[in-house]
Structures are given as structure tokens and as C-alpha cells.
Image 1: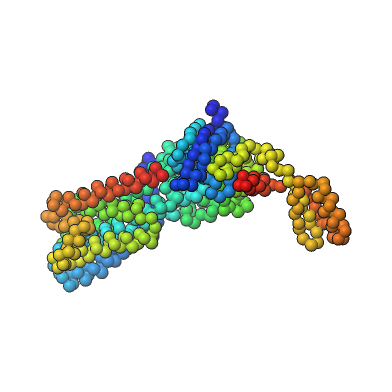
Image 2 (image 1 turned 180 degrees about the vertical axis):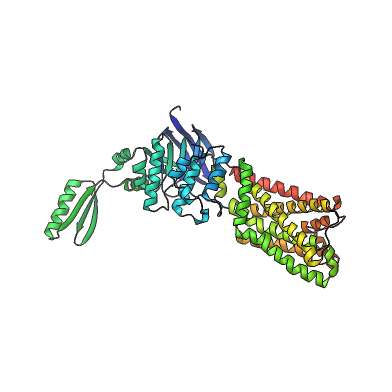
Length: 272
Length: 238
């Protein structure tokens, strides 16, 4: 357990007759960036909130080795509170000193004169991240941290997450953005039907179910994508077909699909 | 300054920034006071001796039943309480700070009424000021405790508006502040006793500070504390 930040064993949680978590088992190493994935309603947030101690669970054991900082998926603050007032309130309750370096990095002091109701989605996300980082936590939970953010907001937040990772923090996040997960996370777990359908690295996931190739062809008639397990035969056949029809090829690309496509495929297989 | 004191001071500031509390704790009660003070003392000059108590009951009831609950719903009916919990702030902090802040705001309104009434309407100041202030503090606390129950138990603003009015209007109409309760039919006179306004009003009158007028307010306060405690405990355990 010494190198583990979190250990979850047999975690079960139901809402009435609806079993959301049916015996989850996984560990997260110290300093690791770990993603919890799953389609909507698969229990990512429930699992996270059980680990965070915000939600009661039916059975199982959860061991957390370190101080936690939590950014919730749906967060709110009083409409008229100013960012620095919220930061001061929470830091006083946690008896933590204000970390102005962190606050500057997140741009909290730039927005200190605005009230919460006047902040943009990105500014609110940054503020809630700052609140989660008060008290210098060892383990940081980020529940869909970039949901609703525009591209610059995402890039900025990714930078912050990387910086936290470089400081040796353990980061646990949920996300629907697979590119984000591929870029930021060391390992990921996919939740399906209340259980872990997969736990490993993005490469391992791709190796496991990524036999499918995608051929993207651009012609004057438009873009087409073909999915195949036999790259050589399909590619030759497609090229011959286009040559016969005298359709000139403007661009051609072959890839093994994104993690998102694999994830959807895995969820589909599990359902079947 | 520790977290709790900072929370109280911050809530005071937030209440001032919030226009709704400004309206329900200051603007509307003081407009009512000016209007009704003028009407009452012209129609029934003898009301000058009880005008301060009447207008205070009206203002406190409005602030406590209509002003406080929406702020509580904003915190306890939303994700704010979850954020507090996630960041190590006790769930009850919102309730306690809002209660204390509303107490301060309502006390200021009552003092303004006390200072203006003798000048504008030749109203009589209470004879036993220490007892009057004690009775006032008790009435504000009891009214706010009822407002707290409303804010914590009613789940949305639309329902709250209706339920608050169901508490506020009978408090005003049946408590004896608008007209003597002896003029009401017996059943309405009895119904008026359910609402703390009639007890608070009698407690604030000269020579009214006695256990006979106090016990019901104490009972209501402790009942409200128990209800709030249960609701908060449930929210914490969820």
C-alpha cells in the first residue's frame, strides 16, 4: 500500500434497485494520472464521490493514502461571492496558507473583482480547481474538468494538470474527451455495467481491441472513411475501384482509430 | 480571523450585495412602515402606543419568512453545499452564517423603525427598553428559525414563494398588529395563536415580557432547531 495512493476493493453502490457499482476493484499508484471512463450513467461520478467520502456506499473497502483535493463535476458557489473571498473562506477552514503562486498560475487574481455569477465557465472551472488545490493536496480528483470549456480553456487546464503531475501529485479524473485522456493519463479504467471492463494504459487498450484500421479517402466527390480488419486487401480493392471509375484521389490516410472509437467498441462488445 | 468569523463577515457582505435581501429586509418593510404608520395613526390615533411593535412584527416576519429562505435554498438546494463539503467546510456553516447575518440586518431595520416612528408618527417608545430589546431579539431568533425550516425543507423557489406567504400573511392578519384580535371570529383568534407573530407582539408590548407570552416561542424555537438538525444530518449523510 506504501506506493498506492488509492485502493478500491469490492465497491458496491445501488440506488434503489439500480446497481450502479457492482464490486469495483482497482488501485492507483502515487504520482499517477488515472482516468475513469464510461458512458453517461455508468457510475464514474458515483465511484469518484464514494472514494472522496462524499457519498455513502453499500459495501467494499476504500483506502486513500494522502490528503485529497476535490473538483466536482457540477460545482457552484453563492452568486455574489468573489473568487478570492471563496479562496480565503476555504483556506481558513482548512487552516492552509494562501499559495499565491498557484493562484497566479490559475489566473484567480485577474478575476478577483468579479462576482461568481459574472464568471465564464472557464473562469469558474479555474476557480474550483484553485479551491481543490488549497491545502496542497497529494491526491487531486477532477470530475470532467474540461467539460464546457472552449479550446484555449482546455489547453490552459491541460497545462495546469501537467504541472500538477510534474509536482508528483496523484490525479484522478473522469472525462468524455478521449484525446484528453490519451494525452494526460498514465492509465485508464473503463466502467461498464457497474464493473471495470478494462484497466491499463491507452496503448494496451489499443493493442487489445484495436485490430481495426480506418482508411480515410478524399476525392472531388467528398470524404469517405472505410473500416477494415484486412488493410492490404481493402486498400488495393478501394484504389482499383476508384481507378476504374476514374475518380482522382486528393488525399488518403490510414490509422488505427482513436481511443474514443476503441472505447465505444469495447462498451458495445460488453453490452452484447 | 478564524474560518467561522470570516464566514459570518462574508455572509454579511454577500447579503448586502444580494438585491433580494436588501428588498425584503430593508426597502419593503420600511416602505410598509412609512405607509401603514401614516394610515394607522391617522385612522386610529391610539395605535401610536403600539405602532413600533406592530411594524417590527411586520418587518421581522417579512425578512425571516420571505427574505431568508431563498438564500438557504440557493445553498442547500444546489451544488454549493456539495462544494462546501468537498472543501472541508461544515454543512451547517451556510445556515449559521445566514441566520446571524439576517439577525443583524433585521435588528438594524427594527432600530431604524424605533428611531423614526416617534419623529414621523409621534409613536410612543417602549417603557422598559431592556425587556423590549430582549423580546425583540427572541422574536427575531424564533422567526428566523421558522424561516430556516422553510429554506431547508422546501425544495424549490416556486413552492417556497407560496409556502412563505402561507406563513407570512396569517402572521400579519391574525396577530393583532393590524387590528385588535378581539374583533376576529373565535376560530380565527385561535388560529392566530399558531403563528409566533401574535406571541412575539404581546411579548414586546409594555409589561408583556412574561413566561405566559414566552413559552410558545421557546417551544417553536427548539422544534425548529430539531427539524433543522435532522435535515442537515440527512444532507450530510447522503
